[in-house]
Image (cartoon, rainbow, N blue to C red; front, side, top):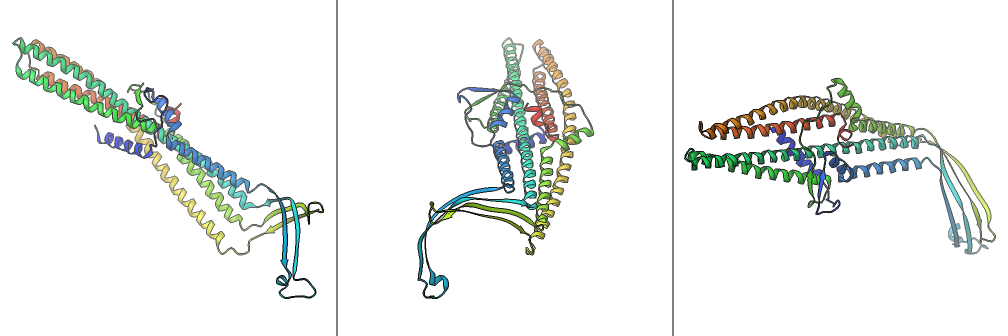
Length: 445
């Protein structure tokens, strides 16, 4: 197994631990759930905690947008007051003033009615709403990015499970072969044709193959546990894989079209673009603070000493306000927004370079893995033929079983090479889909 495969497996396990959440039961805990790759992806997108958190963040950004919009709408209110008043006239006047009494009241006061307030012209509020709108679109792109990331993790983990499943089947078939060769060696020894060393050598090979089965079984179990964690299933729920590890047709090589598609489809790029627009609107909002704003307010109601003797009262007001001196606040806000725009620009350039690298590497690995699969298939065919010939020669008594044991080792290596080549091919295909922003479209629908 190559270092690239080991590192990728380590990274997947780390991300599974990082992104996994509290497991929940899904149906009958005692039953086994049979999942295709598409089923696993759809289930993860439905109940993975990180996907749910991203959806909540999107809902929060929608509420921020609603709050910004509400600042542009009229606000209406109503109030009802019935009070008893008594005051000290001397305290209000600052000294006694004969012949006025010392106290005022007590007397009742009633007032009830409605009031309103509405911005007639406020460019700052308008720009802030635009910024919130772009921020909401950016949150939607970030949510989609999380869905793409979870899809990649699920697909990678599912392929790891398929690799372990295929390796287990191959190991079990080699155990059957080793068992048959051990029996053949024992029979030949009993008949006086074979030797004890042949039987011993065959038995050693049989035990080695059995040990390999144990190791692969453990690898399959741990891979299934990781998949269950990503799917947020109950830990006691058993998973059965419905798919097999095989060669799936890859999309045709489209040269520069893949990069253009990646730049346009990657949700991370869209999120940065929406963030850039949001920051630009905030900068405009800071600049708009220098403009005057017009606000209309008013109230209408009844006022009197009691409800029975109340009379209509009203107040309507139009207020024009504009800043004269803000202590450098507007300048600082614009400078801060300008720095944020430069930061986003650098992040966009870095992401663009990263996407270019990911697409190129994924395409190179996909082509390499396709060739590896062809070579591995041929090598496996030749290894099977070698085992057959070595077995026939040993059974005919023209050679010891050393050739058969050597052929078994080569067969095991050929099996591993084929399984790893198929895994690398499918993983490279998934990496290319992730690099071009098509993970959910390819594996989840």
